[in-house]
Length: 446
Image 1 (tube, helix red, strand yellow):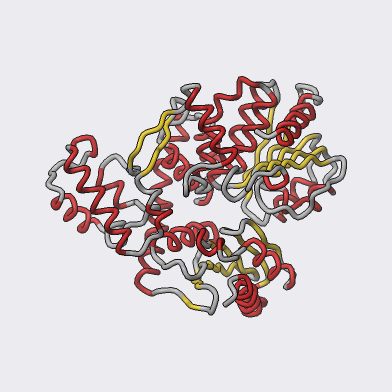
Image 2 (spheres, rainbow, N blue to C red; image 1 turned 180 degrees about the vertical axis):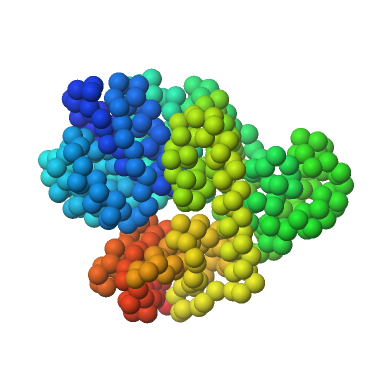
C-alpha cells in the first residue's frame, strides 16, 4: 500500500474511533458483488470494534437513495464502492462522511465533513488495480490489523468487478501476495464449475457463455457423450476426460472470436479460502445474483457468513441466471441494433442489462464496438454499457461518454472507461443515442 493511501486509511480509522461505541454507523454501498463485499468488510470491522451499523445497498445513480439518507439523523456515514460521483450531494448531508471508491472522480477537494479515499487520487488505477472492496479492506486493516483475515472478501469484490482479467495487478496483487504468504487463501489452476453436476454447471454458465451449450440440455448431454463419460460429476472425470472437456469448451469460445485476455480468464488461477464457502468467482457470481436480482439483504447476509442466507442465495442464483440465459438466447437469435460507433439492445431490467452487456461483449460479439443496454422505465431510460480493453487502448472512455451525454440532456451518468451507465428522461432517448454516437466516434476517431 502506498504511503498516501495508508495515511488516508489511518485518518478514516481515527474518524471512526473518535465516535462513542454506542454510535450506529450508517453504511451505504453499491449492490453488486464488489459493493456487497465492501459492505460486509466494513460491517465486520465495525462490529469487531464495538459499533452497531445500518446498511443500505443501492443501485446507481443513487439519487433517490441518497435523498432518503440525507433525511436521517446520522452522525457518521461510510460510503463504499460509490460516492466520488455524488460528492456534491454528500457534502450537503448533515453528517461526517467517509467515501471509499474507485470510480471516476468528479471533485478532488472536499468540504471538511467529507473524507474521500479514491484509488485514482492515490496513484492506483481504479479500473484494474483496486476496487471498492479492496480499498474498504485497507480501511478495515487500519482500524485493526486483525482484520487482515477479511482479505478473501476483498478479493471476491475484485473478482466480481472482473479485475482478474489480464491477471490481478496493483493493490489487488499486494493483497493476494500477502494473503497467500499468510495462508489465508489458496490458489489452483482450473475452469469454473458452479453447479452440483457438470450438466448444471454448463447449463447455467453465463460467464463464460458457451454458445450452443449454455442453456441447452441436449447439447450438454451430447458433449458428455463425446468426452466418454456416463458420470455427471466433475470429480469422477479422469485426467483425459477433463482435458477433453476443457478443450471442447475453449474451442467453443475460440470459434466465437473471444479475445485472448478473455480466453485467459476461463482456465486460470482460482482462489479459495476457509472464510469463503466457494471459489471466489463462484461466490462473486452468487452475490451479484442476489444484489441485481432484488435480494440484496440475502446477499449481504451470505457475505457476512449466514449459512441459511447462503442456502437461499444458491436457489435465487439459479432463478437470476435463468433470466439472463433467456435474454442471451433471445439476443443471439434476434441480434443487436447497430450505430456507427456502438451496438445496442433493449432489455426489460436495468440490473440485468449491465450483466448481459458484459457477457455479450466478451463472449458473443467482436471487439470493434462497445455495447449499450437500454431499459425504458416509466418516464426514464436506464443505460448500461460495456467496452473491452482493446477499445480502451484505442481511446474509448465510456465513463466520460455517459457523463457528458447525460449531463447535457439533464440526466446523470459516469463510471469507468470500460464500463459505465446513465439515467435520463425517456423523451431524450433519441437525442442521447445520437450524442453518445458522436462522442464515442471522436474517442475512437471513426
